[in-house]
Length: 169
Image (cartoon, rainbow, N blue to C red; front, side, top):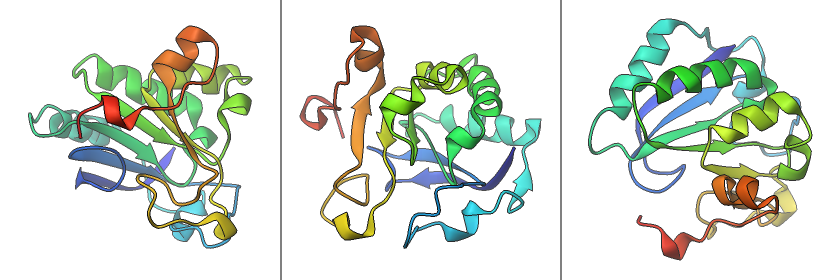
C-alpha cells in the first residue's frame, strides 16, 4: 500500500482534532474529486512500520480525538489497512473514521472490507457527485454521502446513521 500524506492535526475530516491518513489509489474517478492526485496507485510513498509508529505517537496525544482514513480509496487496500489498524489498536483506543466511494451495502458483502469496517467506528460512504455538491454539509462533499455508525449498524444488522447531536464535537 502507498500513502499520500499523514496529517498530524486535521479538523476537517471528522469531529475534533484528528490524525488523518490519505492512502493512494482509486478507481472511482469521481468528477471534481478533491484529491485527484491520490487516484494514482503509484503516487505517494510505500507504507512502512515507521508510518505506523508515527500515527500511534500522534494518536497517543490527549488532544487527538481519533484517526481518519481517506484517500484515494481506502477499500482498494482493505487487507493492508486491516493489518495497520490492528497494530494501531494494540497501542491506542481512539475512534476511527473511514471514507469510501463505495456504499456500505456493497462493502459488507466483501469479506476483507467487512473485516476492516469492524475495526472502524464511522463510515462516510458513497461517491462524490458533483451535481449533489453541498458546501454546508459537515464531513462530506455531496448530499448522497452518508455518515454511518458502524458499531450500531453491524451490531443491529441494519444501517444506522451517525447521530451528530448525541456525540461531542
